[in-house]
Amino acid sequence: MTESPLQGQTAVVTGGARGLGLAMASALARHGADVALMDRLDAVHASAQELAATTGRRIVGVTVDITDESSLSAAFDRVEDGLGVARILVNSAGISSGVPALDTRPDEWRRVIDVNLTGTFLAAREFAARVVRASVTATIVNVSSMSGYIVNIPQTQTAYNVSKAGVVMLTKSLAIEWLPKGIRVNAIAPGYFASDMTRDFVAGNPEMVKEWIGRIPEGRMGEPDELGDLVVYLASERSRYVVGQNILIDGGYTVV
Image (cartoon, rainbow, N blue to C red; front, side, top):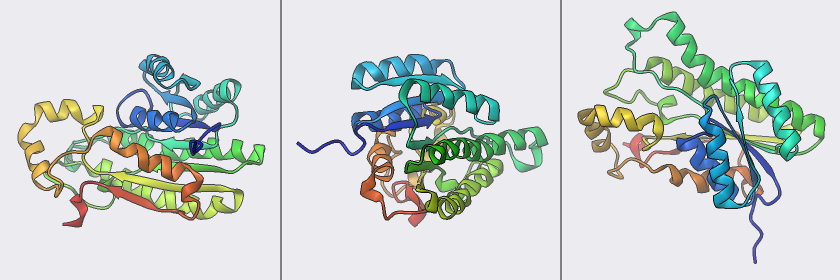
């Protein structure tokens, strides 16, 4: 019997309480990893209990503000106390914004950049510092977006697009800087997925969603569990020669 590719490793997934983050955490657990779900939502604890029951892995839920250094430090301390040093990080926490640029207040702009870009950096830095101290190798998978490459319409989301473009370059920069330290960094760039972030929007904006789907060659939105195999691949040694890449998974949207 072939051993699961992540057997015995500890993974941290930010934004892990629900949606795409929880789907990716589930894939990691099914392939042998113990997982810490981090999220600002208290629902992260119930999600952790359910995931532990369905996978048989050790799962912990940790509430955290990824834009706050002290909160992140305390969260990673809890992970180490319960599961040991994490060697996989999936940076999935993020927020969206559909406010037109002319109407975007500075505080709204900063909030999107702080969570999506700065929070990704701070979580990666906290993770990497602990990996270096432990003298182990590790992998980071950031979650950018196809919106980091294109201006997808008809919605207006300049702040979101810019934040995700920043994650693309952050991934490349950290990949080169940290590879000599034994930390491999890549990213996935999802297109339109039927996640918790989009579900309410979909229900209230059927015409816009119809236009989205009409632009996707695959003819549908992605399902959260379709991200799992890609994340497992990037988190495992099977992808050890993949460095600094942002892999689009968008049903062909950005091809045409």
